[in-house]
Length: 436
Ligand code: UD1
Ligand code: MG
Image (tube, rainbow, N blue to C red):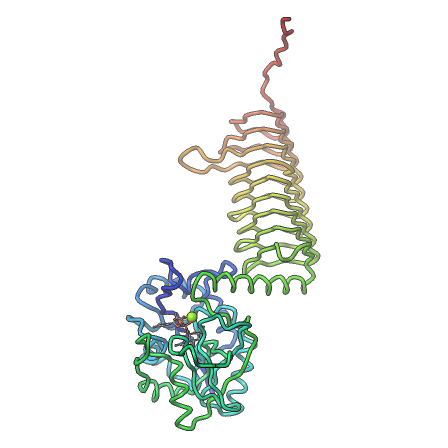
């Protein structure tokens, strides 16, 4: 039996209180919709259709960059989740499989393993509709509640429709369901918007199919995998959960973390073998760490590659396509931007290195600065191999310091330095006796 995926992403996201569309808010530095798309792709469905609003049309190419073969459906008015599915079904590509898996773009932690388990059971039992359910640890939430009779699911009551005196079980709707596509095509039109929110609720499909005698069931999964994001506190909770998952993954891979709870990763962080990470380190997007690297405390690293046996920090900031090669040492209070630092280079204290290349075995003294910005544009600094740059020097870019050169302490260098040259500025030390 073939299956396709429909992802609902057109909601207004009013509760996020933001100009950014809800599904583009990030978890682990990746928009929520991409988390859902990544899990979807691993299931290898026949088609993935994403239902988007008019506001999201301008994000189409960004979505396509992540997932090439994606199809879109437009929901111009946000009339509810059932209406969003109806919009998807208006496009032929959403009706070409026997089974539809409906995912919500605001539920980013879903694992393809759980979805696969449910899909297999759905096929085996020849089910008509199966809702993925969960039991939150408390009742202070806005999820829809499941009404069951033995293993039969009878209906879902939305929070907005439940009366205070209703004593409902805390078994909740994750928002994800598997349903035979023919039921969507035939029964969705039976859903109306006669409810407190005046919306077409997809969850009403459960009662419709159940009363008509179809096989409607639910399958329970761990709550933390299916947290939904409707507001900023939900997003913070999902981020917290996601960080816990990443820390667990890296600890399992053999990464040493002295205080895991103080280390933040991005969804694409890559870390090699025998890496040690000290407390309070932040990994932004696009960071790759090799083997036997040591990252000391309070470093902020993004868009950077750090190769084997390099040591970084404490208090280092690395960013914007920086490459730190093998055995290099980047010490405290060093900022490096868009630079290529070759093997065994030492930049041990208090430096700003921007738009630079530093050749192997060079030593950069404390307080060396690349003056890369002339007020209009950024300029390049080249330092060759085996150079020794004294403390507190300023290199006025564009500039080239060739191999085996020495720059004396406190020198402002504004001319290219040929290979094997020593330069320093001569300024006399004036010495006077103090008059009594
Ligand atoms: C929904 C479920 C609720 C479930 C919860 C799980 C319904 C009626 N309720 O509630 O039972 O417990 O998710 O997180 O389905 N969307 C559209 N177009 C619309 C409205 C929504 O595409 O017109 C999309 C949103 O972008 C979002 C998803 O559908 O990705 C869910 O919508 P949302 O408004 O967040 O529903 P919840 O109130 O969370
Ligand atoms: Mg939601």
